[in-house]
Length: 117
Length: 114
Image 1 (tube, chains in turn green, blue):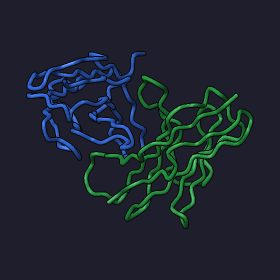
Image 2 (spheres, rainbow over the protein chains, first blue to last red):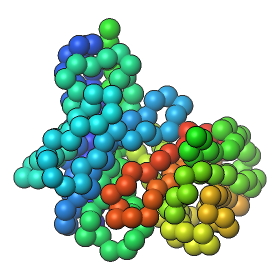
Image 3 (tube, chains in turn cyan, yellow):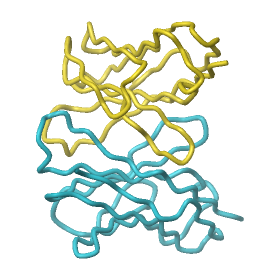
Image 4 (cartoon, each protein chain N blue to C red):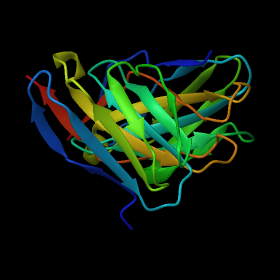
């Protein structure tokens, strides 16, 4: 089985401050991990993914995420948040040992990020 | 470059009515998915398709049917709408490779069942 948890429903930061959105996962094997962002009345947009290799992954709009296998975490980070980063963020996981070729993802419940000016 | 297009964007139905949601993608993706998004629950997979002419059930398939007659289109049907099906529905597509490719999403259909 595969699952992902986003322990914070909301994250509030001031513009210019570092932003962290937490994600932990559970898989039987090794994970593929993804972060998506959703702006109001829009679909999910892909930010970045971890497949293998370097634990620090860089993505779109200045975001990065750190894969930590011992803590089963994949936290999303941005060194200096912008008001325009205010959105809903989703973490998703795929267990690469999962049988089948359907590539289903399991999504977290989402974290609402609010960046105040 | 349209990506994934969903129609309609909004719809209000009465209990018991039927309707079909259309998803079209122009990226030649093999895999397509239908999700529903409800507050605090993330995205839940309804049905998915791994290729033209094939469909399979996801986590929450009851009350929905799907068809994939053409590679670029994936239809989601509600035969007899219920208030519990009030939700935002998202279609997504992806390449059929090793499972490490991101899914591309449409902008959603907001459906209210009265």
